[in-house]
Image (cartoon, rainbow, N blue to C red; front, top):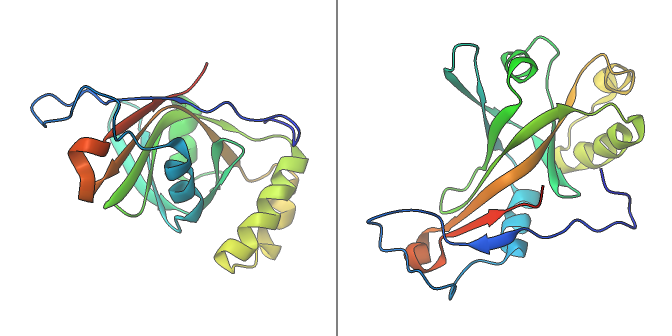
Length: 173
């Protein structure tokens, strides 16, 4: 994860490939990455889709945080999400508001840095008004996972201006 002094490089904006949807080829009207980040930060519930062994998708609601250019969330060590991510790191994160949707495709990895876990807990508890006290020791001792989803590509879809604003962001590798 980038240090506090290090900045996260903004992704490159372009148009998504959506044949027959009337999406213009020009860059006029593309949504700025700041628009997507605002929605990623303020969303309360997020949809996460992971892949079961055998390729069947699994979608569930999670709470999480957009921090330093990635999505972080906690879950149980034996949850379906964890078991899926242990086998296949690919996943999709979506914000809760489909009228101003942000969809992030990326790869998940477990966070082992205890300082990042502490920061996660410090920001998570006030956002959700949820006492993590009973889980804190297990999270800080790495018994329970926190995953970081690093984006590869993201999509922004603003319903009121769908055709002119549909945006795809590609992230540097």
